[in-house]
Length: 247
Image 1 (cartoon, helix red, strand yellow):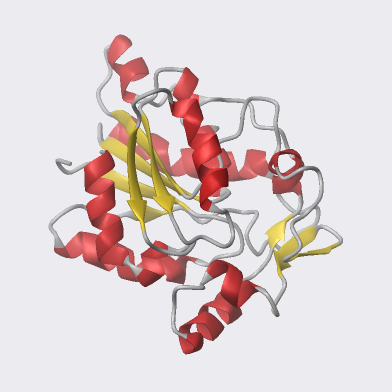
Image 2: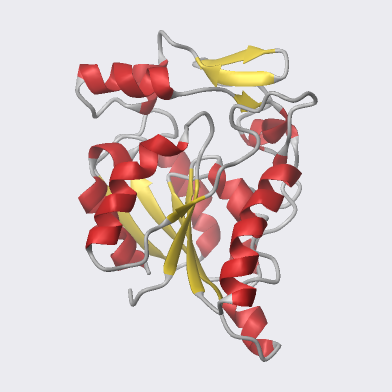
């Protein structure tokens, strides 16, 4: 990987602090410091809570200045539910589309990190079978992780004290994110895509990740980490190496 800017599209429930260590490690290698997008669906307070459209707008509000004003090349790193947000954010901003229009910069690759790849017209909840998973706690317009289950679901490869810490740092996500259908498949629209599997993931089990990654075609760029759902916490150095491999 040369030196594109990494833009992080986070998954549900997690505040920006969970990415701080990974961002610092990347910065120390001489690459541009990754940009973390604050998604409106995470911890929103103004009713009605935002949904997919607002998250997509937030990502594009970061991408457009980097690409159109600065001509930068960007790797979009999407974690968990951030996969659907990132997928819907790149239309028209990928490098191929911009080169065809005689413009510089663009998203050179989307990397799905234990992330959802939704077919067009499918929602997160629909892909999960129409009902929230047993460890999800639904309260009106908000979805969070059940505090009794979440430490082992999201952070199973961390020491107990860190499991407790990061579980407490987690917040809720707007239920609207889970029910809105996706409208764009970058992997079917000539946007280069890769997948980083998390082999010991209790939130999004490996077979489920693999089934979604089949949409990438017969010879995709992939890497596998022996980690739980959040390798940016448990294995940040290994995550960076995997990212270099798939880019």
